[in-house]
Length: 352
Image (tube, rainbow, N blue to C red):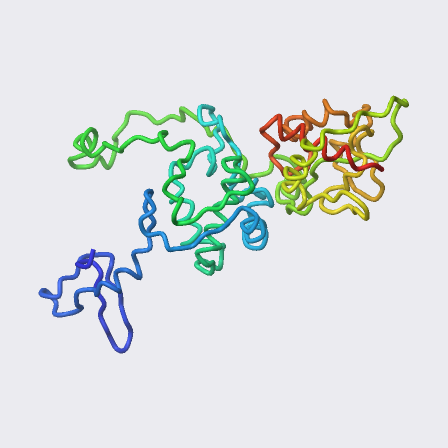
């Protein structure tokens, strides 16, 4: 590497000659790069953790740092804004024609996440984050992909122990041995084929809106996301009081609700934020919280009689966009049936 990294002082300007090899013996210019100069350029992080600085960061610190530096492009839940990359979701889609390649579904090494965030993020202000910030953001991205729990702390000490789901999904590129010889020889410059025809077209074209107004919808900021809707209408019919929720389940649900706090409030004085306040959501008609503007998708389902009972809440919380096409709900959903039951129990403790 040092043979390629030469520094030449010309008219008071330091020039880095990295594109081609410059040998001091040939031109009488430059010198061998010093070890500390090479180290300043060599900031790569290896899959086994080599190159990592000391430090650590937990999920909830990462939530705060991500919200400050990353959410404007990648969404509060790493779900992506408009055409900015999605960092979460996509598990089980790699065998489809239009796979969703995210950190959780596609990236084989955690070191790639840490290295890229450290080198290139935030957009427009690269390398402004501290190592602890990068550890925390990486932990939060793992959490957003349901790969760790909310009490997880990532550090230089446990970094190499974490294995990504798609770690075995890549193969060694052996084209140098198997294919390159086929390409050798003089290139054909004219009349190389008898005819040219289009044989395939892109299956997914999501960079250009198809209809008027779609661009505004696609580029809507995370602040317009519409998480779980609450209703304030009276129950359709009176029923016997529901049995008290299991205290342990409620406590577990309070922990799960941390994923919702960025957008929702519950309890005394709860107000509408990005999403509606959730007091009384369990056992209410959908879409009737005063002062909250719902999506047309939710209003349509509410008009058809959607009622937030345990069954409908479970279906919505597991897959908001699958349950309600057109919702502005940004959260990708809860993967665990236990988490869904727990958060439903927790929400049931808050009355009207």
